[in-house]
Length: 356
Image (cartoon, rainbow, N blue to C red; front, top):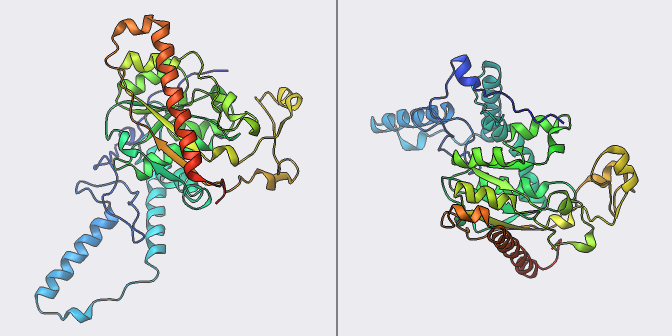
């Protein structure tokens, strides 16, 4: 499989349409959510800046003697109009090229307006995710987030990334390292790049960390995703400690993250290994609902989730000799794994019933 990386791209710069604000609007929508539109020089998007100007003009009119009882009542269609205006703004930026794509293919505007909104109902309502320990994720600078991996499909990684994007004060993007197969599947490969993922190789991980990015890695890989339900919440091997070597080379702290809830969404009670070999995939799961119920069996079960970010483990004090010491790498790998495992056990006890 080819692992050729797309050439560096900046659509905004290429077309001469640089976004002035360089970030997201500081205002909130009528539902209390952070506005997802690009900010202008004032820190507000065009829509909220216009509303601010209208409010200032109304205040000036009141000061001139207009009675306060003459205010216009709230428009019941305002939430829909907000959504429509935001959607039209997104379409305009796609048509005019006023959006940025970095050298890895990451498209923050697409994530904000298309991909993240598709996942939010799962996060908020279906799995009712409770997120803890976000204070351990730095507001800026490099860090390596290392988590457990389970659930047949990688929803746990997506929920961790969404938790950081939506609930962390700095609304950071988690640049996840994905397996080769993710970049060989049609549609999935394109969306993986657009959402900020890149190939799980040391070179890409180091480049992102040296650029000050927040990087996510799931050392269990397919061994964790495809393990049977009877082995739920028992971590698989963390490989040879490649993520530790990357952290030691860059001096980035390691932030263990423990996910509880993903093991129950597709309880894997069997594996059609012959069919998996025929299709060239790691496994073909058999669950209580799939393939018995056909496409309906692909709907994940509504388990209750807890995601906890643990205190960071610093690596900048180890020195260059640590990379040459296999025992130092093994000990640090084991420390990260044990931290995640013990946090999982504690949160399982706190959560109670899987679907309660």
